[in-house]
Every structure is written in C-alpha cells, then in structure tokens.
Length: 255
Image 1 (cartoon, one colour):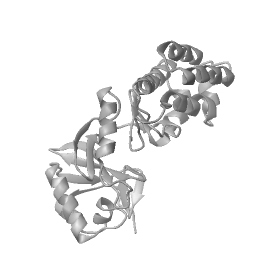
Image 2 (cartoon, one colour):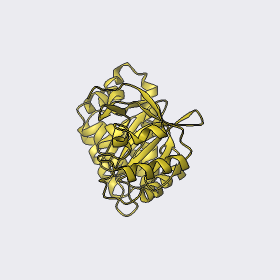
Image 3 (cartoon, one colour):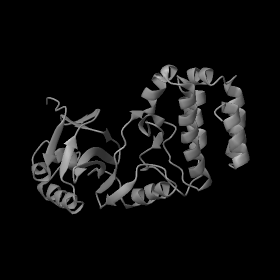
C-alpha cells in the first residue's frame, strides 16, 4: 500500500479503510469503529490528521506503542494529540494512564491532558525533536543551551523521584523525550507510584554513561570521567535527597 504523506479526514470518513484500521488498530469491526467515532464526537474532535514519522497501513502517525497509537487531531481549528487505545492492549481503558499522567501534570511535567474517555486521551501537541536527534546535533548547539536543556530534564526527573512517580521507560529516552526550548517528557503508559523511582538514574545512564554518544556529551561538558558520575549516581540512588542531587549536577558540570 502506498504511503500517504499527509491527510486530514473528517470523523465520518473513519468508518472506511484504511482509517478504521488505525482508529481500531490492529483490527477493526463495524461495531467498534462506530463506538469509537461516537467517543471522538463527544470529545469535540473535528478532524483526524495523519502525519508523522511512523506508518500504519500506509498512513502516517506520530507514534505506535504496545498500548496505543498517537495521532494529531483538530479541535476548533487548534492542533492536539490523541492517544488511541489499541484493540489488543492488555488494558480495558486509559483511566490508569490518565491518572498517572495527570500526576505528572500537577508538577508541570508532560503534555497537558485536556480530555479523555475509555479509549482516547486528548493532549497538548508538542512540536520538537526526539532527544536522539537532538544529541546527534549537539556539537552545533550553544553550550549554555545544552546545559539549560539537560538541567531542565534532570529537574523534572528529580521532581518525579522525590514525589514517588516513576516514568518506567526513561532508560530508552529516544521515544520518551522531545526537545524544543525545553525538555518534554512524554508517554506515561508504563508509569507507576508503586515501585522505587529511577528517573534521574535512568536519564543519567542514557545521557552520560551508556549511550553511544555519551562520550561526546561528557567532552562538551568537560566531564573528566564517567566513573565519577557512576559513584555519585550510586550515592543518589541510595538516598534521593536534594543535597545528593546537587552533588550530581556539580559532577555533571551543568550548574
């Protein structure tokens, strides 16, 4: 099936393939697509925009995960993002993810949630680059800007750590952090308040220790060695307090 690069469709068109197979991914039925169209109508969504870097059945979307599909929508001519619960998801609704995402929102973290239903979450649309692309261009970015972005990201992670919210997937930040004028942590489908938090340690492992570009970041920030980072990280992991967090930031040379 040829790829459609960009397409805006009305809700009534979603009854037809290939649109129905995105709204009811990975398999659709007439009854389920009608129920979901009704949900979208109740959420005041005007149009669905098929656009993004991921492809499903020849249509472009923003993302595809184990729980849902992410696409752009229009509400009163303003762009938002919706997350669609997959038909084969192991969750009967989006309610738990909404609860955890709203916890992050309370601390000004993550895209703002506006509306939600059983199968959909309507969120703020955040335009930017995924962090892996940002890192690949880091040599051309002003050093002060790099420090500001990294500090902003770590501050969000520290806030989640001390408030008991673990994101759960920051060890692979490529799909979970978008960079524009700040760092934006997205996708709270694996988040939990019931396990030990590891947001700061996961991000630091990805950025400064284990990633293929970690040596480049350390060189730009003039970090002498990763051993010092690992030592301070262990101390922070054992006791997540502000003093240990500030010691970590000092070791990373981003204060």
